[in-house]
Amino acid sequence: FAMRNQHVADPAYYTVPMAWMLSTSVGDSLRRTIDPAQATPTPALTTPGTGSTTHYSVVDAEGMAVATTTTINDLYGCGVTVSGAGFLLNDEMDDFNTAPNRPNSWGQVQGSPNNVEPGKRPLSNMTPTMVLDPEGRLMLVLGSRGGPTIITQVLQVVVNVIDFRMDLVDAVGAPRVHHQALPDRLRVDRGGFAPEVIDSVRAMGHEVTDQSPGG
Ligand code: DON
Image (cartoon, rainbow, N blue to C red):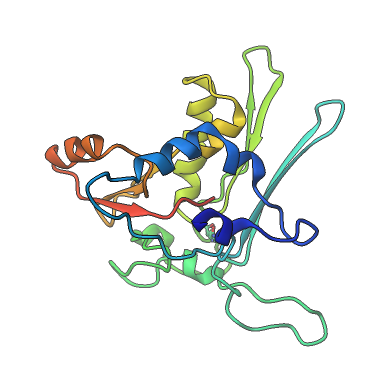
């Protein structure tokens, strides 16, 4: 029911992630949340796509590809709509460093090279990606939403396909980890990893917290 509550809807209005819901890796990670000794809390409902970034990948019959990631940064951008035009303005200033050691809305702490300056472009984590095989043929086109996690998400899907030889559905559905230097902690997809694995990482001195899978 947790998955159903989250994702079941009229498919004319919502892309129900059927392949993801039915994938072995998602089943495995759900199963790992079952503790035979105690009740597993039901995770709060997370609304998919609550950030304001969208990625799409398009490939035509000849193998011409486009990878596009587009954003207004935070949910509803800066909260200002353009009267009569029907769209929201972004809050991309948040991708600049605005004060020493002050995290932006994605928790990123950045250095002075990324300070706000006239005409300057801010840091972006957006990573529209094409992977070619050694013969130069198109192999993968991908990207994600998720602020700094975009970089680690895209990397992990590429590693899953190339190094772990997963098909794309399993590669995208596999649990992911994220670290962005500051805050100095490892985030792991909730229910995605065996407790012994997390304990062994903690024993190495890492602070570990869980995160809702996303992207
Ligand atoms: O470019 C960046 O790093 C941010 N503006 C991206 C924000 C984002 O992914 C929002 N959606 N989840």
